[in-house]
Length: 381
Image (cartoon, rainbow, N blue to C red; front, top):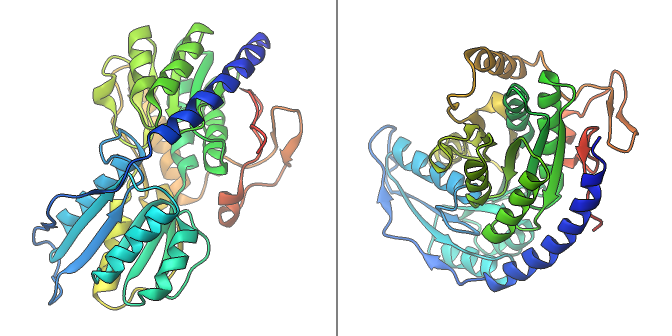
């Protein structure tokens, strides 16, 4: 089980907590206005007046991960709906900055305002003041007459990523750089391991938390430490290209997060799941335009076309690609439940019994445990 790694990385994790948290404070920036709004090409019937949609990002739109995936969704909306005008702001922080952005777009009469990160408390504070503006926020759970929420089933994509990782010859020890140990990320790690061990039951995963979504120095440090500890493959659930660069330099395979990142590590690239937000954004804009929009909680995965897969690298065999497609279709059809029990955590506890599972409607509440084979722990607090 290579138990010495746990001691090594416990020290590393503490160092990264201090480094990453300090970096986050230093990187706070003011909101940046977008370029001029862009009209879409004619593909669907346009409303009499343009539908005005604003997007709020908590980082840069070309961050190589989370925000870039949402920006791809905005571009999808532009390309597939006539009569829509969009704008955006970047580097907006929770709290007063979010609320100011919501107020600004509401007072300008925007029809739809989309927040691409956790902002439920802020949006519920502002939304009642602008009943003619619809607000969508990522990851929330409390709706209002003009507030809905959405999220993507990361675990669907991470299970498929695990299949790809586990199929690689000689891969026994996977280094995984994670942002924060929130339920979504932990759930993704567990699903990744389920896929990997389906292909190779001896695989282990070491997770290092950098306590940031975008901190290139911390991500590079974590990835290099994993390589130095003997990682045969690197995976990431952070946004900077640092982990990919370390994999490329080390000559080991790499699996990305959230978007097609094949260009940043062409020799190491295997694949990575993608967030496909565009169809959801389009559906919400169309519903608003035709007067059928209603507040809802939307949690979408492979079956909802909210999760996809980036192109595969040359090291991924046709046999593996066929298996990934087969498993993807089984998930869509409902004939495969990769969270079906029994499942044991890395402390030896049965967390999902024989015959049990994690029901779809409870997925977002999981997980506060790491699955068997994952080296590490969920930090307290």
